[in-house]
Length: 170
Image (cartoon, rainbow, N blue to C red; front, top):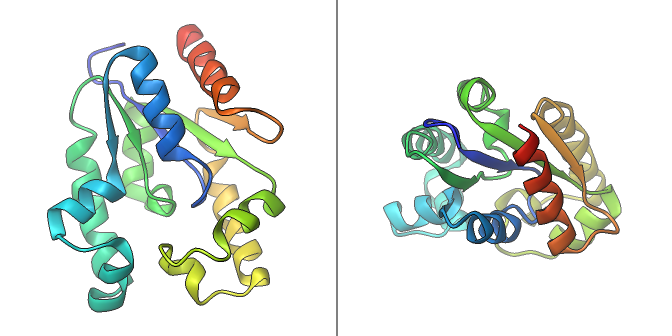
């Protein structure tokens, strides 16, 4: 791994960024960082509570600050929050220095994973059509990632193997 380069996972909520990121880090024997967990630890509140009590704008500003700080750590695997890559500053930093992976799933799979979640603030009050619109909008941005992994019909182990294969040829 080059000195400043990290592996960064992005994608919709429910796409498996944390589980795939964690498994990848174990295989590479390096540290794994889940940005959402770091935010929760830092503020002592769940993501849902942060949205509820402080609002999305506050969350996004804090998310940018903490993500940019975490990306400065060398040789780690980072799992972004679902909306992180929408932020132009973070996206530019990730594309310039790091190896990014978009965990892409079909809409139906994502909807089944997120529609009844009480932990995902943007999903709680959204209709299925609103979630599909969000998936489409974010997919246009996620597609800028260095690597896209089409995850449907793949096990977690197969996804990790594909990530590692792309990483080795990088």
